[in-house]
Length: 125
Image 1 (cartoon, rainbow, N blue to C red):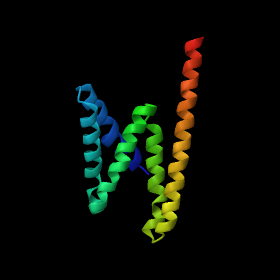
Image 2: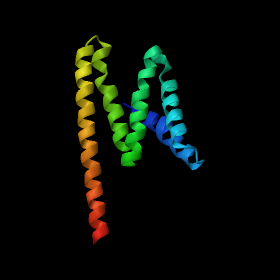
Image 3: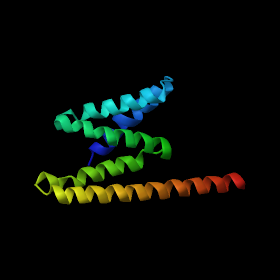
Image 4: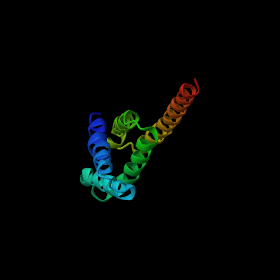
């Protein structure tokens, strides 16, 4: 459960902020963030390449929401739902992962919409 917060800070936020502060272009930043994430997961073997989808998605979500907390929670919950596959229940783990992804997406969209509405309300008053 600890790996979510640590990994998201080390492999997403820190490189993204540092590279953008150095005025590195967005395509290069995204490419480096994806490569860093794959390097974090080399112990997966060839399956480490699938982590690229997560890396790209988290970078997009971070830029959209401007918050890392939801991504850290989602990563920790993902790690938690992975435990059934470690004892041979890969189907259950897949269903848990899909449910988790859908829930996180719904919560993220609702949270951002609420934040944007409150900003508009403050701007009008």
